[in-house]
Image 1 (tube, rainbow, N blue to C red):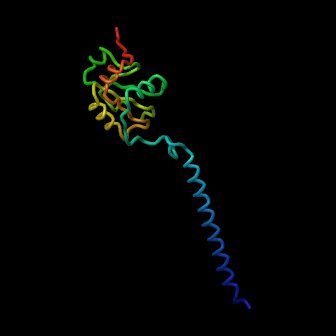
Image 2: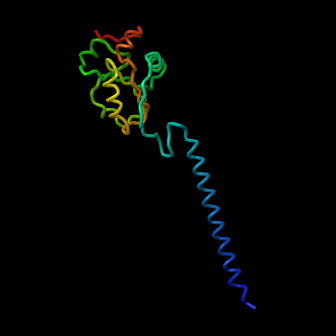
Image 3: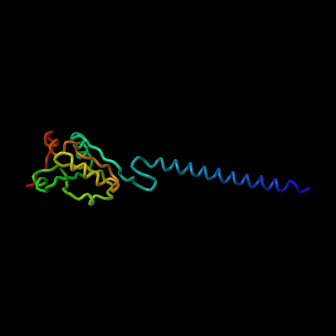
Length: 153
């Protein structure tokens, strides 16, 4: 009698489908685990876009600028004349945030106080990959703390 053959065929089809589902789940789990090991600054295909910024103290900023060659220090004071009178060591002056789009470096942004620094950070959100930091208290706080100021000749 051949009446059991369709039942056996259905059983084999179900086993094959279950095996395929098991393989898909296993591969998905393995991919998920490998993505989670990329690190906090990288996603599955590279650096993660920056979506926030934070203020840091002059003490922390000093430590970062002394010990970290990868941080970019940006003076965003409204007049370059202020930059020319004195600025943080290794700082560059700009009023154009688009020049830093797509950078992967951490950025430390400062001005006299904080207002322009925060605005500059906000303009860089979703356009850069490094940390966005602004100097709490700005250049005035740096100067009052007695940290070095570069004064061009």
